[in-house]
Image 1 (cartoon, one colour):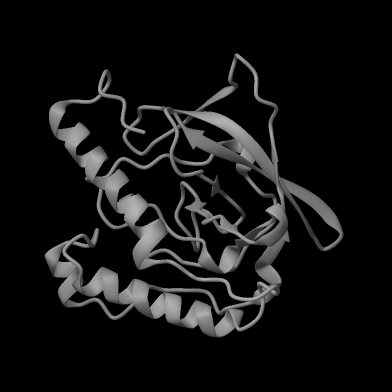
Image 2 (cartoon, rainbow, N blue to C red):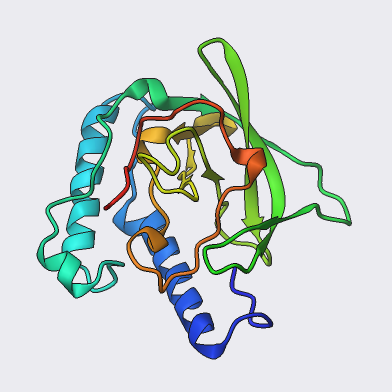
Length: 215
């Protein structure tokens, strides 16, 4: 995710640090186990616990993206109310493997694009209309990446969009829960380099679920 040909040494170190935090947050601090065959079973309570742990991380963990001043006055992240209508179960339609991968350049807050491989797409329905979101993979492999924008972007939520965890469940399916939509770290500090969603992942509907703007 960090292109050393286009970044200075200091920016590379920050980029590597933010990548390490991204992987940590996705796997450890923000893990949300899914039990049983029904991914919705006990979902609301699990989301509440997830938010409590996330707030604790931002407040107390030395890897928190918040500066010292913000951590001292931190009282929790601003969230939309939990609404399980914004949780969608489906499959990621993976693009066929070929000798030539399809790439996409995502803009960043630093003005330098970051290149990803197009991995597949996630389709879902809302109010009887079909939508899809492109899923990306970092160059060289790694965690799948799903950024998106919607009609709340730039007003109630981060202008560059938010990120979505991809939760694997049984039968090759995944759960995409917009209640877990979270801000890139540059919402909290401009020292981080954050890729943003392109037009292909802009939804023409508001998604009032997940994290709101911090300030």
